[in-house]
Image 1 (cartoon, rainbow, N blue to C red):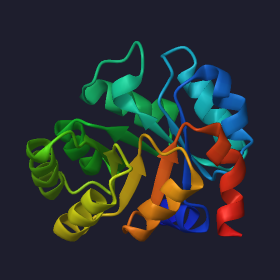
Image 2 (cartoon, rainbow, N blue to C red):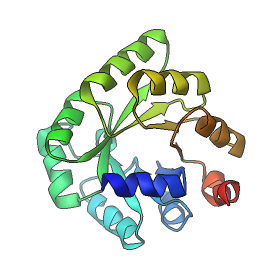
Image 3 (tube, helix red, strand yellow):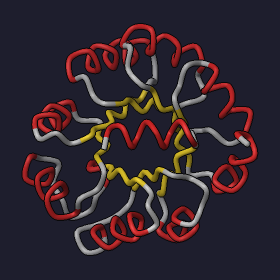
Image 4 (tube, rainbow, N blue to C red):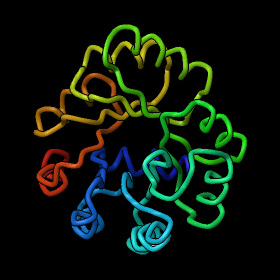
Length: 194
């Protein structure tokens, strides 16, 4: 799973972040090879993951945002064994550690709001060693470079990325990809890389 993630993101570094159910179909049929599922509940999550996998895309479930599931080891095991995404996204360091113990591909999401949250985030990454990091907001090339330099971890930039230029700036700052809920980027981004 880890090799597949990095292969797909190298081929196409735009990740479709689905935060609205009405955008689900468009994301599934977009050029994006990787999907971050930021919506779902205990009733529809399995079906959504299966639909994404049917079109051979990778899907990563943001466990913190799933309705009807707690943010604990039991929910993690349920998602891993029953839902079967390619991995998880979480802000919770304790879940990253547990996911790593279960050989689940994990992306740690960090919010960089100020210098304290930046330093706390870097320390957390060094301790948990996630497979990748998603930084929000993602339109901060200087911060991407700093986190990359200090953690040596693969970085995905997310949040407030609205234009092709934002994507290019993030990639030049050493991000391996960007996640976006902007459908324009899902439709247009293949033109940047072809």
